[in-house]
Image (cartoon, rainbow, N blue to C red; front, side, top):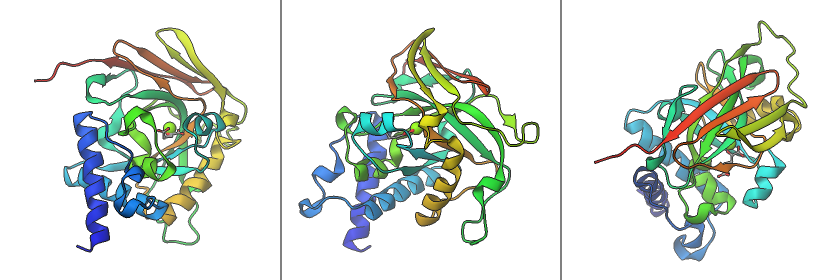
Amino acid sequence: MSPEKSMIHTMAARLDEARRSGMAIPQLSDQHDGGSALDLASAYAVQCAGVVLRTDHGEQVVGAKLGFTSKAKAEQMGVSDVIIGVLTDAMAIDDGGVLDISQGVHPRAEPEVAFRLSHAVDLSDPHVDVLAAVDAVAPALEVIDSRYRDFRFALADVVADNTSASAFVVGPWTQLADAPDLDLVDRPVELTINGSTAATGSTTDILGDPWAALPAIQRMATRYGQQLPAGAVILAGAATAAVALSPGCVVTATVAGLGQVTLRTEEVPHD
Ligand code: OOG
Ligand code: MG
């Protein structure tokens, strides 16, 4: 293995260990070899190596997510670029299901819009159009959980950390066959915790129009060699800033016209 490859693998392994142990680590860019900042291409290589660690353990890639598509989120985290991450089956929680919060570092929830792809998309085909593969839209909750101390990071750090992806819940799907030309602009979005409003926003906060997430995903997934398998879930990005979770929360995200999705948090004792 070249020194650079072994460094990338080491970083991916440290992040994976932090994820599995729930113990935060210092930002990678603070202590990258030689003191130079981690560049974006290397950060995506770390993310990819981290996904391989998970698929080597039997997880399957089931989708992709965008991050920092909302100004509120980008400002909350002090970053400016859109980023892409990978969703695996181990991150999926059923609507109304339970997130075991004792597994996390410092999980937060954010309301999102999800798209589903009816078939696998071959990104090596120059004529392919991810948008044309979408067959359904749903309200969604994403649980993000930075593996870095204090939930603080530079852009390359969060990319290496698979864009803080931790878990996701998808609500009822609206089939596009039943709702062709579904307009997703200007729909109020609300996140509640135990019945109280925790954050509000609008779908317009997601790149101006959540549909814009599809060309963005296509561009980023092509650039960074990510897969979009049949049935893939695409998370378009948060419509509000993320809200910290504690045990005993009932969390809902509602997107007007699309419906509601629910997640419960519990602290499950482990030996
Ligand atoms: C990075 C993930 C951002 C979104 O929807 O903007 C993200 C983070 O804030 O930790 O998922
Ligand atoms: Mg998100």
